[in-house]
Length: 626
Image (cartoon, rainbow, N blue to C red; front, side, top):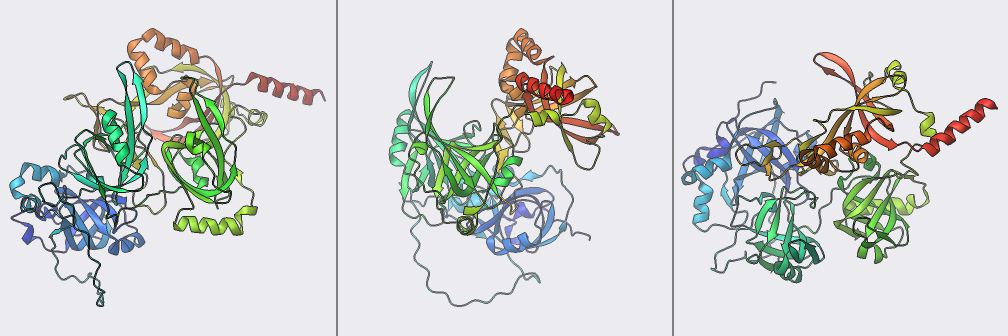
């Protein structure tokens, strides 16, 4: 099928003071990125390309069903039969009636950004003109262009009841209406913004102490229809914000600083976070219409074992086991923490242990058999898979959601009497069964493991004989992104992990995928080593989880050691070399320099337990003698 040409410059002209009236539908555009939007009146957020310019769009729920049912995907050409625009900080097109024309080619274009163009040519910006006139009400149309199209659906209407009066929009001290900015558009490049958001999480007012002194710290998460963002306050501002904000209530927030999110302490997908300061304005909003209470991205329990360790997920399950709370003492600080382990199950037949901490652990009093939703859980990989509730996580018993109602019906009628498969294992060391099922390197090669259509997995006991010391880690993007945007299947949010590039101009580190610059990089392992046993030698790659277990420190710490103390770095490499380990390997064939080869990746590594090894050998000797 031959696709029609794109409507060149349409995305720019829609917002132009001189050209907007010349834009007529239908428009032909290409969709270069898609993000599914949960709840509200929008079903997708999209990035559009007209052949020259690139801009953002929101798809109305009215045509979202059509797109979902017809395989809406990236790089498709669409015909826009009806659209409008809204007055916000950004130039966003609302797609009200679209048709999929066909799949286009992947574009690696150098598209001009609408935002950048109108920043350079403000005299052409129709949005700026409307704002200057004071037309700043949220969601006000500034343009709506439509022509007759054979693809426009016919509708019938009836006379509706008079709508309930809407609350008046908020006003500033001068009496002018306040413009509400969607959270998803918040960035450091904006100054005069106000969000209307619900406090979806409220942390404790904590104290900190270091060489520079002591202070207070307080964090909250703000949620609106478009996204969720973390906000932090320090010292006097922290105390003021803590006393003003209540979890579950809606507020107007303005005059705060925006910076890149510190992903080490922030599991939300928003690339930025807010710092509240002494001038930050916090005003309670009594109109909570269209402000969601919580947003979930549930993952089924049987999918937890496929996720990367430390991934942040939301889960829902029936409460099966409640253990008593106990004390844990941190080795690094000697501080005591309260902990309680519970177990939840779901209809996939799996059970998983969930760790609760401190007040949440001590005060937990939910009855067994109740349905519980957990928001913000970290996947742990110790003795199998388990979950732990993060500091910013939430526990919601018996939530009012379709998933909860379905799970409750299943558990009461069937699940209460079922047996479940646990994601925990007894030990991460080598068991007698694992030892018996080991292969030698030569055996794996003779059996052509890794040369089929699917990868093969096997276990070897081998010695690290050589390390490439210059290529053990790389600077990785820590930005948390939603997997498979646009998919109806719930997937967890995980770090981007693309390689960062240092910028020669200002020394920052940039991720091209996420379009974010960081002052300092976050390093991840990609460690290559040669391993050998008595039968052969192969090269193996260890990624972050396995290499961290091998070295005992994260990649950032080892990188710092290499830069500051070469002798200590050499000692660290020598310390893990010429020692035996048990490797769980994934073998898969690929092409390199037009030649087929088998690549080996370690998906697990264990230190040798010589007591277990000796017991196994004794049993083998007994079998031979008997």
